[in-house]
Image (cartoon, rainbow, N blue to C red; front, side, top):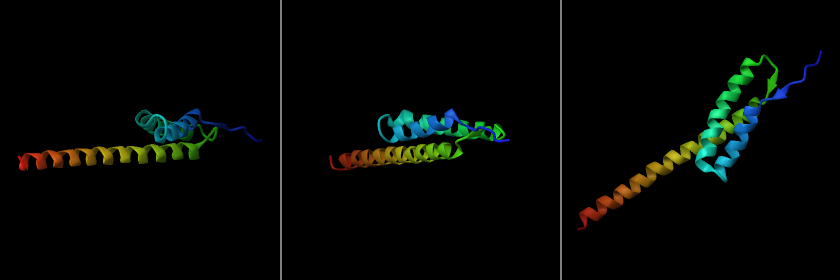
Length: 93
């Protein structure tokens, strides 16, 4: 007997938020993509085949984690450059 599988709403939300995290709402979209992606994967695993959308959840997670890594790298570089400039300014005064 064929069973109709629904797509997880959280998986869809994760993918949409991951895309928005790269475009319109960078910080919030990134966080929502990561949280919803993890929640969707757990929901799909617990559904015993009733829910689909693991690929969507993984795509949202990948987009979210890559964006988060770039945020962290950008912040570290910003503080490194500003710290270097401050050090350079104190050395030349």
